[in-house]
Every structure is written in C-alpha cells, then in structure tokens.
Length: 62
Image: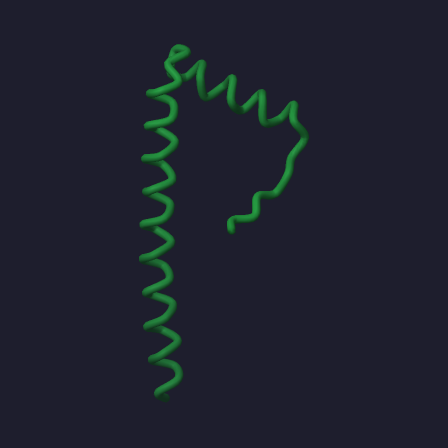
C-alpha cells in the first residue's frame, strides 16, 4: 500500500486548479500530462537506482 503525505486541503485544491488552468479546464488532458510526468520521474528513478547499485557493487568488490 502506498502512503501519501497529507497536506492542507487548500494547497491541494490550489494545485489542482492550477493544473486544470494550464490545460484550459480539460481534466483528461491534465491527467494525461500528470501521468506522463510521473512515468518520466519513475524512469529517471530507475536509472539512478541502477547507477547507484552498480557503483555500490563496484565499491564492494574493491
């Protein structure tokens, strides 16, 4: 189960309103953008994890 940090409701509503405004109120496009951004972050995290793992294994072999 994923744990989410809670923030004051007003901040979340403001962020949601800003995201929708950037997409001219098109919720579907806003969601597509958020999902694409999430996927890009996950990809960068996976690459960083591999690099760190390889570095750790290289250091471990010394």
